[in-house]
Length: 128
View 1 (cartoon, helix red, strand yellow):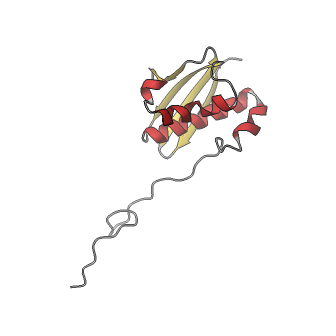
View 2: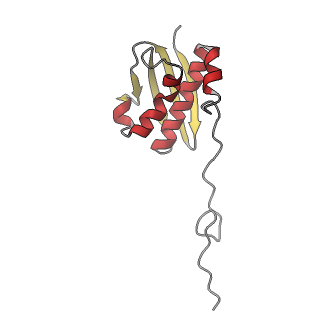
View 3: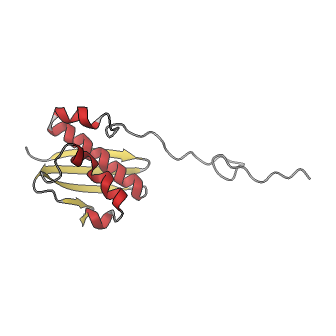
């Protein structure tokens, strides 16, 4: 099979994933993924495409991820793994697409506008 390289994005996080046949080791930025993503929710998100396709112990995954926060990074990794699973077997697409794992989430942080405190919040109005 060789190594499959895919990219996933979410907010400002970018994840590069390298998938090869193995025993289920997942390394994120040269750390074990359970130490990089300590909460159960984030670990579930990373493993979601593997558990849906029943491949948790079949592939070794090496991840380089940067930008954004922990949730954005976990979801970027999830998208990249889902894309890699689709390249391994086209049948997996029918499982992953209804779960929404192959759709790039377009929501980004709205920019701050001048004359305002934040994107939509305004400075306190004083009538007098």
